[in-house]
Image 1: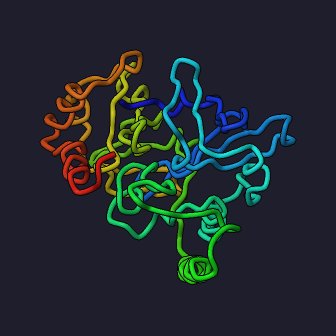
Image 2: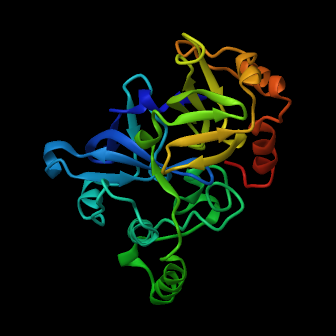
Length: 277
């Protein structure tokens, strides 16, 4: 099921021993278009410090209570590496963060989360995978981890704040069609499936969906997203109603309109190549 990023804001993050805080923003990977971290305000218990929570740790959400449970403790969060969420998160910061929690590096694989499409597949113990927090690693494993980290510490992490892309202009091949008003994310893979585009300056009162796969180029300095579609093609596409839940039949209609293959076909192939969840 797809969830609006705007709706997920202020969801509570509950550790195994209590509430950590509330979601305030997200970092997404601008290559894979996957949410990599939730920015969480810890409130009074940790002097309103903002911390990062990886989808790797998130269990089954309680949508009714607007709650996201995570498989970490408040003490772990308290002692986690300090990261200034008001500044870009470097690859070196990511390596320190992932190493602290004992998570493997997600980049370098053929799928969104290393060798799989679901973040919880990177949890220690999943499908035989074993990983331990930094302080508990055997000497040989720690040496390998340091070597791998050194090799990647200067990589470009491609992380962007979700709130930053709100109001970005969407440019079709023959003109502007509107601006980004929201994002729809897959609740299992944490992949961004669509940008919700407000076309009010061009086509009054309408919203349309644009998938990241249709993006031709993004100019981050100019806050502009260029897509390989015409304005007329977008205007003739099935309408999007933000008040209703988007179902697979509607998604199929959108992709069929553009003559493109849906992401779920690729996902099905990937799922067949990984161990049972």
